[in-house]
Length: 180
Image 1 (tube, rainbow, N blue to C red):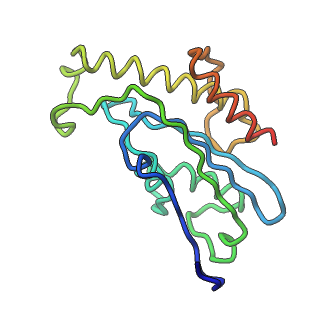
Image 2 (image 1 turned 60 degrees about the horizontal axis):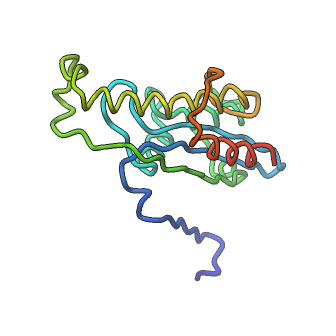
């Protein structure tokens, strides 16, 4: 273990590299003890794909202004009152960020190329199963955003969705973190 002030360590279980459905929560604490949150999910609306939580994280921290997947960075702009996706080292050093994630079983890797995925594939039994599962995870994300939108950096307001019984545990754990 290093004692130097420039040392950082990120540690995670290898399952964080496995493509899966998941719900995740960024918890951001600024030096002035203000807390911010961002909630999201893995599981694409248009293609039968669910990236690993770390793959999704990589998209969220893209500093490209034209990125459509970096909504976490867009939220951080609000924290600092910025219009561009540029942050100084000093600004970023004011933040302590945790990424909480909850793996949700049910994702099966699509057999075949997503490059050639089209509307004809959407009638298959496999896609219907994917879509059904993705919609359940989306309902959980929407419910969390709806109930806690005043504490979140998300740009949407969510939808007051009903939850699958087995997702209530995840909802309650996220609620506990946000309401601390």
